[in-house]
Structure formats: structure tokens, C-alpha cells
Amino acid sequence: MVQVAAALLFALAAGFGLTVILAMLKVNADAILSALLGDGAFPADAAPQPGPATVIKLRPSPVRRHVSRPISMTPQLSRAA
Image (tube, rainbow, N blue to C red):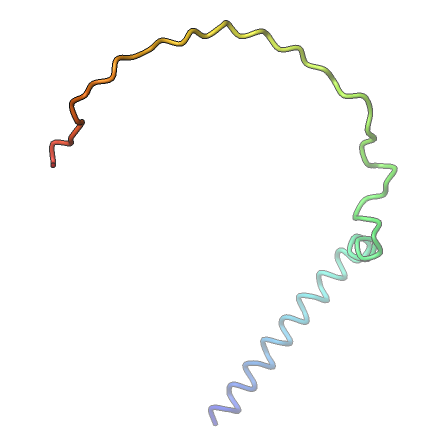
């Protein structure tokens, strides 16, 4: 009895999955088929065409000076230690 119920549940899930796949194919058939053929979802004419890159001039940053800091020889222990 349990095997019959499991088989019916499996058949129901498989049928639902197949229904979802067929519905997706019906809605997006052109895009899916063109992607499978290697054309992509959109035609090449509608894609942006490459051109010369826009050059952005950056402001020079000020020169950074290295400031040496004294090193303390006492160990830094936490209060919990």
C-alpha cells in the first residue's frame, strides 16, 4: 500500500515538473531555441557595439609622507589575560 502511494506521488511530481517545463517552453520558445542554436536571446544587431573607450583623467593624489611611529616594548595584553 505504501509503495502504491509513493508511486502515485512520484507520478504526480513528474507530471507537475513536465507541465512546468512545457509552460516555460511555450512562453519563451523563441529565446530558448535561439540560445540553444548559439545566437543568444537577442539578435546581434540590437547588442551594443564596441567603440573607443572614454578616457577619464584622474586627479593626482598628494604625496604621502612616511611617519615613523615609536615601538613600545611592553607586551600588549588584554584585560582578560
